[in-house]
Length: 277
Image (tube, rainbow, N blue to C red; front, top):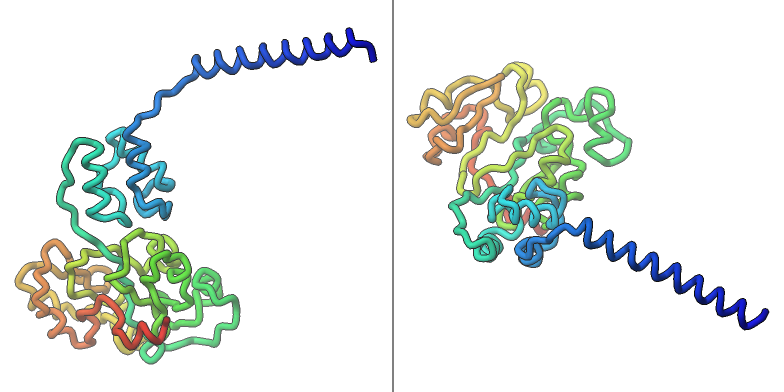
């Protein structure tokens, strides 16, 4: 190969590189999108779990929303108040009062209380079991299936399967909401941390049908309604429901409930947590 051919090839490559470089420089200037410095600072302040509990696709999505003013500075359930304070400083605002929440499983149909209609031998997954005949082996069509799909998605070790149903450790739960989305029977709600009393049942069947499948289910007797002085509990669709904003945690409804399905329970006892460790 002659030297002239080498020079020509090098010139072509250099010329091509120069043209591409000029084009990229023009495109970078033409299509430049300014980045809010606050967004980067907010992203650095967020815990980085990317759990989606805030309702946005990961921490970067939330950071962008906060920087644009589309989400409050305390939107991150994992970071809590400390992270919210930092982000409020970045945004030059203050943190409004927010009520801490935790997950709660609306079922008390443990293995010794709830009846089984057959022996399930498929994949040990709530989603798969719910596709089996009758919606699973548990006779109550509303009860916790107990295979732990919620436990599997919890990144904070806040859920445990105890005696056939899921329990939440409220001290560990950060209310990210993953378990709420994962439960195929929609038994898990995010409730106020300060709430003491819950209706641990989700069945919408009539009382006699509830008693056929579970020893502790709500029978919609309305007795809890009658003793509540704050209009905080009502029977709807055959199930008692507590209005947490009105409830004063007096416990009168729990004392009156003949099935003892309203009770104070927010976390499994220490012995239970050892069992599931």
